[in-house]
Length: 174
Image (cartoon, rainbow, N blue to C red; front, side, top):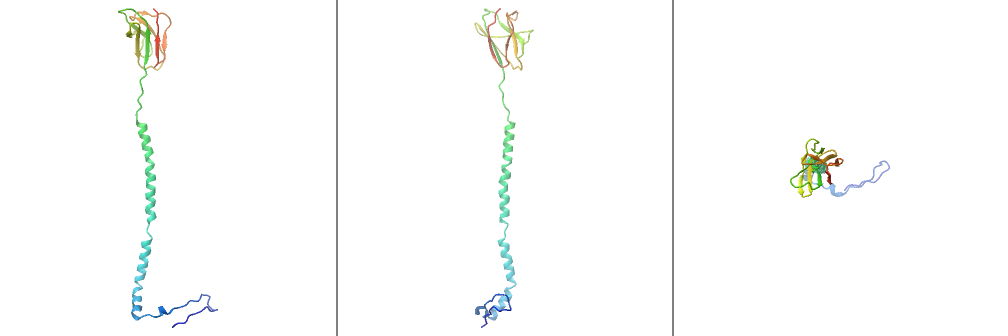
């Protein structure tokens, strides 16, 4: 049996004790230990390699991918909204005249704006015995006009006017 050493004043290292179990070795186990020593570093190297895997490195790109994919989605939606055409309603002007001009006669209108001319009149549609109507196309300015019976006899008084896209009902006199 071996002795245990105790702390001496000469050595600053702590005292260690040796047990009898390691001291008892057979010759076969000593040879096996010598043969196993070269294999031990191989096993020790393999374990740290198996433990240290870049698991965190694989998760970071996966977490960044959804954020990058979410950014283009609003851009695509904005493009779709901006491309859609907007349908606009046509701007029409309606002029109505409340007058009975007699059977067989027609009421015309001349003027400027929305396709009217002072040189030739547009025939109005007879809605009933005492009501005539015309629907004019788009215009960017005020429409100024006068009524004529059979496109010959001008109505009395000043010119009439209606805003573009508006509706006006008038009672002309002759």
